[in-house]
Image 1: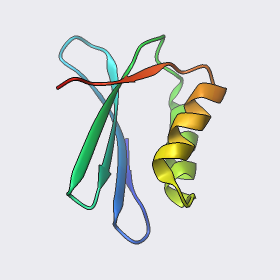
Image 2: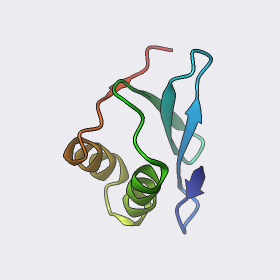
Image 3: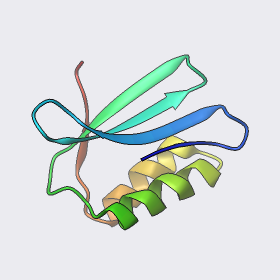
Image 4: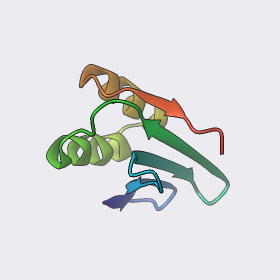
Length: 81
């Protein structure tokens, strides 16, 4: 699942890495990309879909994403690579 903001500036998506773990990708207008590894059990698709969509509608996408994943007990860490 992947989404762009209405203005096209932000991108949020989920993908499975080579080890089978879930990653959340955050990108700002092709200038900055951050990849977060989901450390605990992968959230259900409806939960993560709702978080990604809502984050793109907020004024601070990254802050909202982190806040809402924490509220849902989804543990993420910034990927080193």
